[in-house]
Image (cartoon, rainbow over all chains, first blue to last red; front, side, top):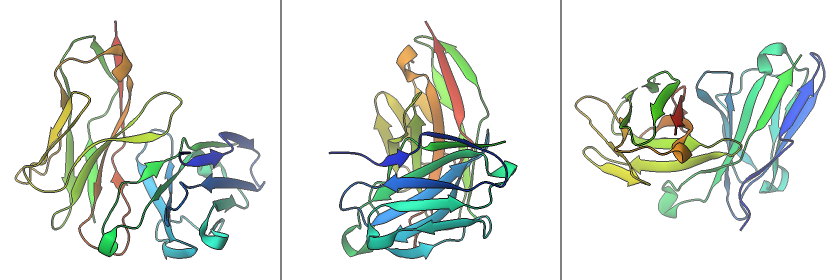
Length: 117
Length: 114
């Protein structure tokens, strides 16, 4: 079974440009999460989808970031316009809905390394 | 709010040495605690977890015990191998709430030399 897949693996863009990251979760996983690790710092939560709905977007840094999950399958994270401080590794994770709303293991993708120059 | 503090790296050890990576947390209630590992070129993988006080998580020779009294979840391994070289992240998931988000520490790079 395929794991969580992220595209691209690396992206180098200039300040002011737009970049779109994609995440394909494990088939059947309704929970989808985005996280980000800025160089040398902790991995920070960005947002959480349950199916196509945003359950929690409290970690989104500002309105230059837009996440979508149309149809409740894959998700995209768009940064427009990109700034230097957006550089980092963006991780996607997915998990199944647990029985009675309980927690299940989250599986992570390899991440997308974004460099804004 | 909830937070995780783990020892800074890099940690460099010789093969068969004993490993400890310290992790402490701040949280209300009874969070679940995790160690994730990221091997070079790969994504994050769950290494072990503990969901209540005094639980011990273990996997691949690694162990960590959930200590409520010291709010700690230190990672240990008795004899490291070169293949254990990776970045290790301590994390917690808060009790309750509508989201299952994880709160991570800064990560500790472990380099094991032959």
